[in-house]
Image 1 (tube, rainbow, N blue to C red):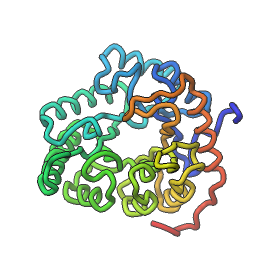
Image 2 (cartoon, rainbow, N blue to C red; image 1 turned 45 degrees about the horizontal axis):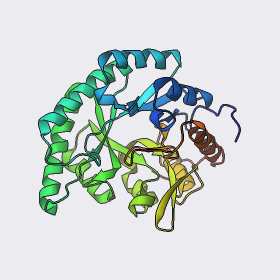
Image 3 (cartoon, one colour; image 1 turned 30 degrees about the horizontal axis):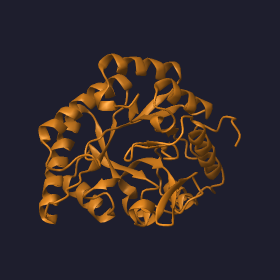
Image 4 (cartoon, rainbow, N blue to C red; image 1 turned 120 degrees about the vertical axis):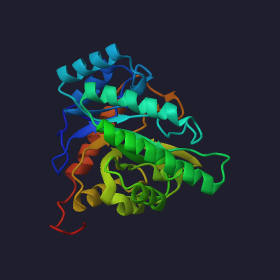
Length: 295
């Protein structure tokens, strides 16, 4: 795979980005991988193993300075709110405090988008789980709106993580300008749903896209270079373009780092960079949509 820089934007003119800790745990390594690709945007989940909401003020300021020096803009902050390690009965006050902390870091990093999930509810009756998720996300969206943040619900862990209808119901029920969707292209493979169909249903709410691909083999999930798996990634990218999506694409290949399992299989950024080139090749092969073909 070539190490020459890739084009730094999508065919629709939005930035190509990447979740930094997928390339390296440390800020210098994260910045270097994105710049090796010739990209100018980054998504922040953790630095040196510390989640973005927990970054000390000094570390956050140092990160902002390094990103500025590297000509990297921050497209999204990936919080742990509602993720696989949480539960919908955890104290709401703690989540509101986390959101306040994220707002302070968002100010420093000049980013207004925060990724959240929709809360596991193991052990709860279905109706109770749904009610608690609705209540909690309503409160978080209200706080986010006051803070000038937009919460992006991911199709991952939680009550609505694998159901387009549940996600759409939450968005319509809460009806907040501070709530939208970040769509992960690869999550349908490990979670067993049709990701392309889900994307089509949620497209009006999608503001951000995380790119991964995967395939099932022998009962195991294997993450692949973009376009080499079973997620139908090329069709998803074509649907996004034809459907009027104008946001960034952020690479999250899971080739070297899988935060839900704690695995980091290699110490280098080469798999991440290879995935970036594969994504650029996919995008280069897309045909411009017919005007007004899909909305």
